Length: 217
Image 1 (tube, rainbow, N blue to C red):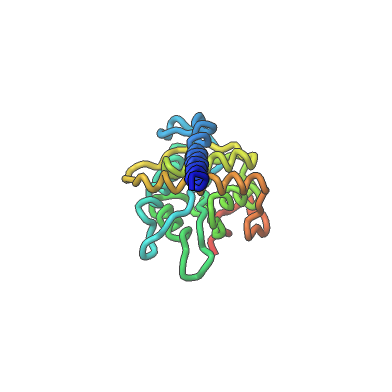
Image 2: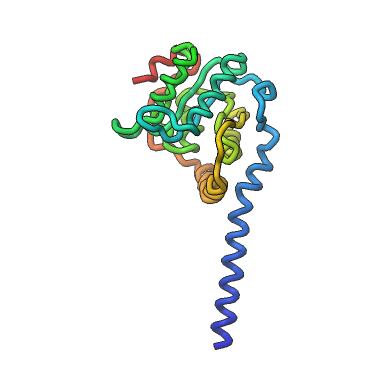
């Protein structure tokens, strides 16, 4: 009986240790890329393209989270910090499209049509970064997403050899859950980078130097 109690105690301590290590992953990840993150448009260096990471859409329009990201990309574009905007997200089914609503949103804000590129196969953050490098031939980019997501996105981009910076997309309230779910997501990101996972789809190259309208359909 004593042996069983000692065994359970040891197992509990080991479990707590594993949980503590897991919680440290996004914290360490943030510390490694913190110098590349800014909350102001003026504070970010000039890059080729603003990368708008996908999020949910409601009735064909960007969700508040996605609209915050698009607004930040528009601000970068207007200030001349980027020359192009790459919208990446999940368009794996005809009934679900995260990128076209953002295209319409950007056009409505006055972004030139030829400067808007769509990545319909950005099914997760790693795929978006990998495809930005391999398909769109991006050498430098500015990631626009919320604070909880930005460190992981930048860490992936920089480990894929992209000169990446980040601007926090602000404006809405975010829950503690947004940060908690970064724990498994950050561990997954490390495994993806370590195994050099290739996204499900790659396809022909579409250089950012071309016309973004070619990527719309």
